[in-house]
Amino acid sequence: MRITHRNNDLSDRELLDKYKASGDLSHLGQLYNRHMHLVYGVCLKYLKDRDQSQDAVMEIFEQLVTKLREHEVDRFKSWLYVTSRNYCLMQLRKSKPEIRIEEYMIPDMESDEQMHPDSEDGLEKDLQKLEACIEGLGEEQKECVRLFFLKKNSYAEIVDKTGHPLKKVKSFIQNGKRNLKICMEANGGKK
Image (cartoon, rainbow, N blue to C red; front, side):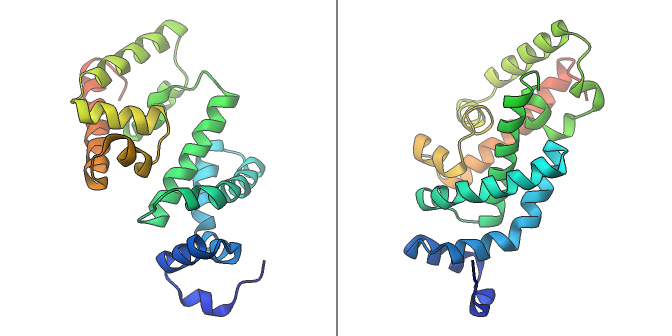
């Protein structure tokens, strides 16, 4: 794929618009190339394997070819980060079904103890606490948290499904995540 020097001067938004208008992969390639280190870093953080992370970088690019034509993306770098993280979490779930949702849902609560629960009973109790905490959220937060973390919907998909403005969706997710952390800690969840 040959990318002209002129495209180096274009913003992410301009390259994205050009790709969406023309379907020309050189525009998408230029855009992705700018942020490939971010994607690789996210993949390495979650997958903890260089070869698997390199494969993931290529697979994520292949997914972008269609995803970017279907979704409205305001901030490409942020959207790409979330897309990459979600891809990795799905890979982890496929290969390690015992991974707990809250490990990745509430990053401030991650610890070695959480990643290796003492027993099946402890895992089940933590999942029950998490479910109870989710149920305790306000309706909008609960709906957005479930769609984003459990159903892996993008912000744009959540906006479409709920009718809430993008800023509200992001706010509901961020506040919901904070409230879940507080609830889990208050109910004996690990810190």
